Image (tube, rainbow, N blue to C red; front, side, top):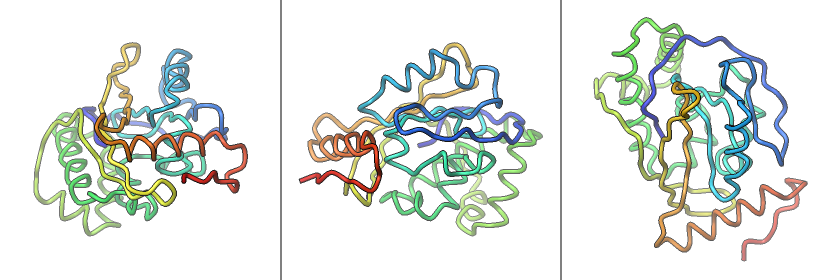
Length: 217
């Protein structure tokens, strides 16, 4: 996923513990992050993974199914809970994407556009500096100078529990907080296997103990 959002300065925050049946929320980063209506919307999306991003691609909130799809966001230090950073530097997230090269290239192209809009944004500068110092692939994509706006797409995942998943995603701007974007994943209507896999993950995410994994078959 990549969104059509720009990059403002942002301070590191302390993460609140994630609870299984509640939406994960990072407090204090934005006046509207964790607004009740946004939390209610995320909680209501029980059949679709969803994450709330700010313009720096920092992950502000998520629902349990998003954590089941990607990773336990609550276990990631708040200053590292950034979508682009996870795509390049987190081994677990990187392995999820069957189409990692395609996804990574689009994400960097999106970041390039944001850099043109706010080239002096401290959060953007810090993110680019860190990724450039730590990842050869990021440096390679950054050097292409590709720039584009992306508000929807399709990802292909290899999930350790649900198997092969194809999910479409859309970036939806939050009306009460225009600097935030809600990313929602849904299986293509014609893809019964991906729909079944996502239903399996939804069931697993509602299981009180992660060690007790229901049998998909």
